[in-house]
Structures are given as structure tokens and as C-alpha cells.
Length: 284
Image (tube, one colour):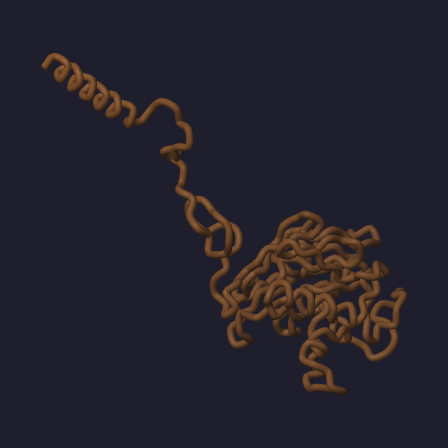
């Protein structure tokens, strides 16, 4: 009987100890902190903490991708959704691409606008880059139409009617002939426009879709036509005066000759990356 009482006492004491050790306190170990959000699955891949409002918000378009992030020379940017009204909604790059030896990375894959590093971008180089972008991302990247470009440059539905893309003071938003020191600059060093788009005025003029070639020619595919580098160039560049850096400023794409007199290339079927670049879009 005494042995039974002793055994019951030991069991009771053990239960009491277990009760206390189960209470808060002691070693944190692997316990979740009281104020730490519980990790949840991120629909776009990986794990996030708390709400899923940061990073890629991959909702909206039929591809399920929405806005995506990219980097230029290690600096992060994104594509911006534009409510295009009757034109249809589309996503546009927050920055223009930089020709030459610059790192343009989307989803861990390096792309280059000027693979030959000569600042002369041919139709073949455009075709190769767009084909690779489409294959790696599953998105229908293309050049913007003239109407899409102008609408986004003016700030879309958020437009304040500025003289330049984001301001009435050109020095706030653009590199142009009076402040560029005769050279182009890194992207996003000036203020953005109402949509958060950088360098729509100045720095590099931007190629738009050549809508004069809307039907198949000589067996060309749709992608061939969308890569045509002979469209108009909008927004002006670092070498242009302020009057040529408005949201409606453009130079005509040409059949022969040069867009810029000092260009080192006849820009039929190519364009000079010293002055001109691209800012790509894809439809929602």
C-alpha cells in the first residue's frame, strides 16, 4: 500500500511539472513569436509573411501574370498597368531599356537589347530578344503602338496635363540638350510621370510599333512585324531641345538615311542605340 501511494505521488508530481512547462516562457526555441505573422503560401511562388500585397501582384490578365519585376544593372523596377480605355489595358515597363553593355534581368534570365555591343540594334536583334522574352516569361511582349505610348507618357487617366512627361519643368523629368552633358544617362535619375514611368521625356527616344506594316509582307509573321525597327520614335532624347521632348514629340521612322544626322548607321531595318531605345509592353 505504501508503495502504491508513493507511485501515485510521483505520477501527480510529474503531471504538475508538465502543466507548468507547457505554459508560455522559457526557451523560445522554434516557437513562433507572438507578433510574427504566420508564413503562408504565395500564389506567385515561394513563401511570404503576412498579407500578400508586396512583390509581384500576379493577378488580372488572362495569362495570370499581371505586373512583373525586372532589373537593370541590379536596380529593381516593374511593369505598370495602364487603364487604356477603348485601346484596352496594357502593362508597360517602368523604364526604357538601356542599349549597350547593361544587364537586363527578368525572372533570373539575362537579356540584352544590343548583343553585338555596337549600339546598332537590327531587326534580327529585336526579333531574337522578343522571342526569348516571350519564351522565358510566357508573356506577349511587343513594342507599344503610338497611341499607347502617348497615352502612357501623358499619365493615362491620372494625367495632370503637364507640358512634359510628369512636369511643366523639363529639368525635373528629362535629360535633354541643355542638361545632359552631351550623353545619355542611367534610367530613373529624374522624377517619374503620373503613372510612375521614368524618362518618357528625353534621355532616349523610344521606338513605337510600325503600324504602316499591319499586314503580312513576304511571309512575315506577326512577331516579325512587331519587331520592325522602322516605326516612329517618341519623347525625344538627350540630344534634343526641350521642344522635342513633349509627350507628343516624335521623329518619323524612315525608309533610307538617318534619324539623327550624327548617327553612325543608316536606319532602315535598324536603329542607333546612342539615341534610341525601346520600352516594351504586353496586353492585359
